[in-house]
Amino acid sequence: MSDVIGEDEAEDTGEVADDSAEDTGGPPDGGLPKAVLEYLANAIVDEPDGVVVEVDERRNGIELSLHVAPDDMGKIIGRRGRVAQAIRTVVRAAGAKEGIDAQVEIVD
Image 1 (cartoon, rainbow, N blue to C red):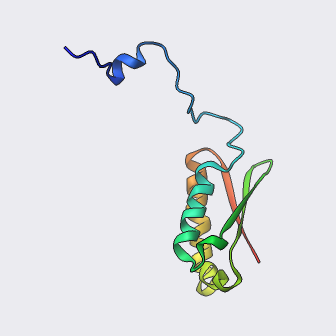
Image 2: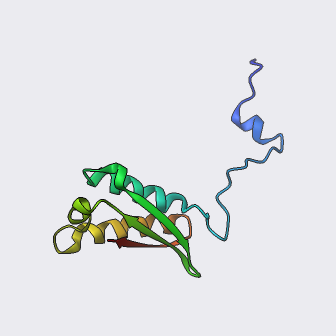
Image 3: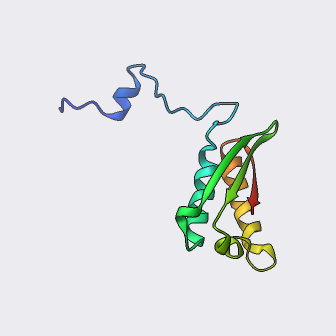
């Protein structure tokens, strides 16, 4: 028998983890939707240092404002706005996973 406490035994001690995601008000920092938006934007643009995501809490959820370098704006929007729409869809799905209505605004 080992002296190391396994995960099952640690749960029986009654210790509560601090990282519970059951916050009803949503994370003030944007949480998963912000992380997904930053990841996608950094992967698409030529200047990842120019990517800035601002989080604004709304009554229905959060609004994420995406700022990129002027030269990268076309890459983020894509032909006929298809890339921008895809980004919005993926970020909205990430928000839904956390129970947050996440909207993406691409700012000039």
